[in-house]
Image 1: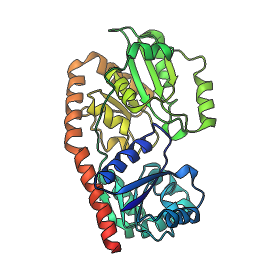
Image 2: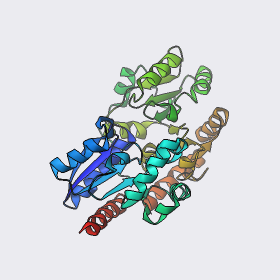
Image 3: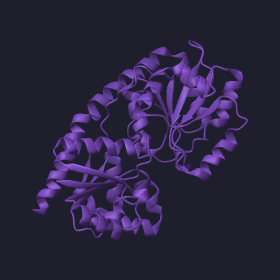
Image 4: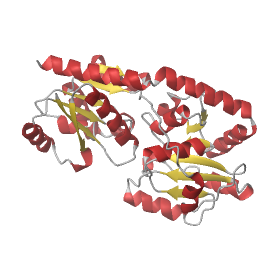
Length: 345
């Protein structure tokens, strides 16, 4: 079968990584799967012509609004995967909300990463509850074993002193919903007192205007560094060598960066929002904070209490093994697509 898979495919973003992984699952079942970047599509009519010309048998989309809407009106069966901002942010816009309802009415299945995400979706679109399946993201980390940390940091303008430096890593595409400036002032003050403390913000510059704003804010700030995106294997190697991974987002579906850090046995400090709290149990598999002041307090605890750090990383690794199986994710998507296609026959 030939599957059209639509997602936001900016390189080295969570959506792109997830799309590549799910594509590999479907291809392992013998399907042909073609990825299309939602940013390059103009209308459902354009996609309908694409489907007709290339003879696709089924469709799949990550993000009900940004990608799913392009499959409306197509003659092929399709499924959708909730992305996070669709269910947390886009529902506040009446036009987007109504359009997502139409997408879900026409979809053969929908996938939510968490039980909570399904509950929220069911409240908005109760008619779709029977077709929403829960499948957490599958995690398989393969860090680059030849990654040269000191050379990388030197090129990024950062100083690394083994045993003294504590690198906190914030991984995100630069857009407002990720709120990368939330902890900047706290880190600048902390770095002034303890020069070994630093925050590295790394990821693609998704929103050009917001990127300029972030660069302007960080221009004369010591202890906080903005770094361009790097390949996934290098990023995972960088995670492995950092002290902790940080998430300060205003909204999340299910952060792949958090899950990868947990799998790599690096502690996570995350803002206490719905998406993060769904995968992090405070002081058990990670630490949740609600203010910059609370973040610093928890980060200092992590530095001074090795038993707490050990407990969190061990529990987080076990959580990933139990709840984010790459093999189970593969089986789920293969089954969903097969059911979708079987209903068409």
